[in-house]
Image (cartoon, rainbow, N blue to C red; front, side, top):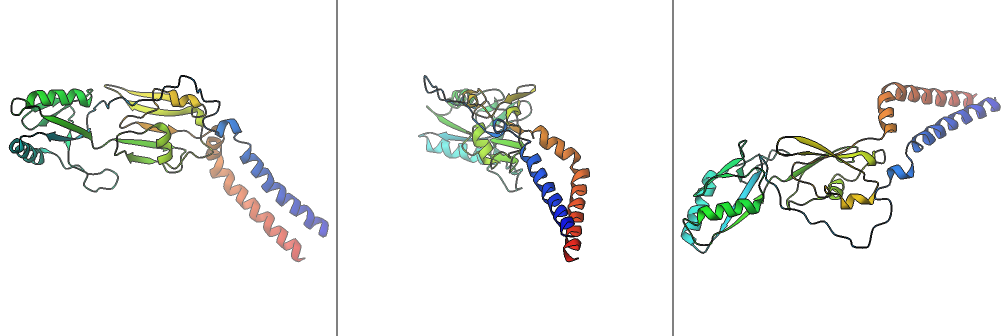
Length: 266
């Protein structure tokens, strides 16, 4: 009886050891480690973020600075009566009021009229607004902020979701940090950034296992970018068969445990 009990115990242990070895062998060190290789410390040029390219559906906060207090009050009153109160898509709470760029690429600004903004930088829009307001005041200063700068991080990360970026600046590394890091089962070599351009949607492949990501043109993300981290082949295969094999393995484990208890009592 002791021999039978010992054999069952060995089978039980071998089963779980095999499962652990199988799971751990799915990924090699090179596949789960980010930023491999040596940094190039010579002639290193740090990234400088280019000015934001405005897009349709962007929500803009526009501030006028002028020494003409009377016109400043009139402008502010006109702003408050024209801006739209948007809803925060993540919580349903009211978001800061701003000017939404319409589907035709324009928005209407008090005293300046219709402004075409899609595909332009903020500096270009500022110059156009200042040029139109000079009819009413001398040397106006315009400040523009994008209120709905957001990115999405999806796939095999610990906390996927869509995130607002208040300072309008975020790198792909920071985006991963916001999503609470990548799971060990992720395919780091085939990360993808999905980005909308003027008339199309493009996919940009990023290899996160290499330090070259810091030199990439997509190191800094743009508003509305989607970062997708796919699962590796082992996880994909496991998820495919898990509805069949996991219940089977669980049942087998319970059976072996019960059999071991019965034999032990005898």
